[in-house]
Length: 394
Image 1 (cartoon, rainbow, N blue to C red):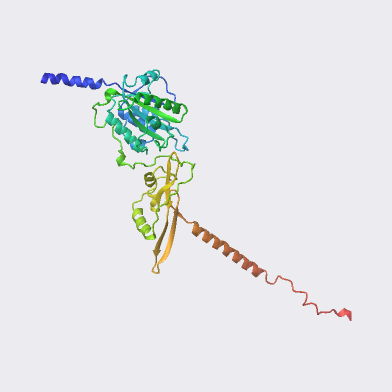
Image 2 (image 1 turned 120 degrees about the vertical axis):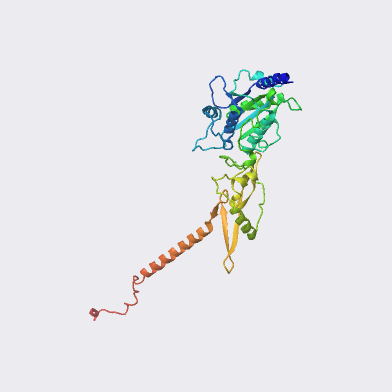
């Protein structure tokens, strides 16, 4: 038994080391020199994916090596400037992990991509379970909802049923039961290349070998990062602009509250509210995203669907008018709120009241002062001198 186990252990180690590396292809506007592709670890590849999808805030780099930083800078896509004005014209980002690639299952794809060199390779590719978990976490960190879409539609960033942000991650298994998956992948890769050529979307395609499907690696082959349960799922990340209104608004009535309910609810919510890190956008893709980005409309309103288009929905804050009672004689006071997060108090009513009162008072005082100066300056009427005659006429 000891002799058998001594031979079995090296055999298992040799089988594990025989798993080929995963090829990673990048299709974007960047032109990279045709050199030998470097080999990255799964953790380094994860940092590159997170940088491209804009979710790097959930993936701390810690004390990484200089080579890891150079890989992130080289393959992490375009870096946004501090003063850059980001709009919807920015190209979308997609990370597509294809599982079960082998000469038998992906022969047409491998033959067509023979002349294309991968940007880099991934050593010791993780198992399919780890790949699915990474894709799901990247989707949630990007604010994407897990949609059951066909691959040809899922790779289309202009499909509002499958995309609600400008970045997405997809896992596709060639060995799934059903129709021939390679035909579906070949049809989708043509659209991917078209989007990349038009600079409408930057694409990262990871070809996972079939032999890594059940590979046994460490508990966290991609390293440690913030799980979606530890962050606000659906949180609006950076520079989400409001989509222009192209259809008639959908009628929706936000819930109404009386003054007592508003007073009690706002007093409890305001005690736990945190200051907004930045001015939130006017439109949000979901009600949860609206509430998390605006801190529940700063406790002065509610989120509701303002309008809906074929691409996405628009959820925004409906600010309320708060009324409360003070004093022994039970005086009532109303406060109005405004802004994209109901964080600004509406002072237009008192402003116009004070402004009009000031104008009226200035006009009245000016008229009174002018009237006082005009006293004694008017000429006497000619009737007074009519009875006076000169002495020379006698």
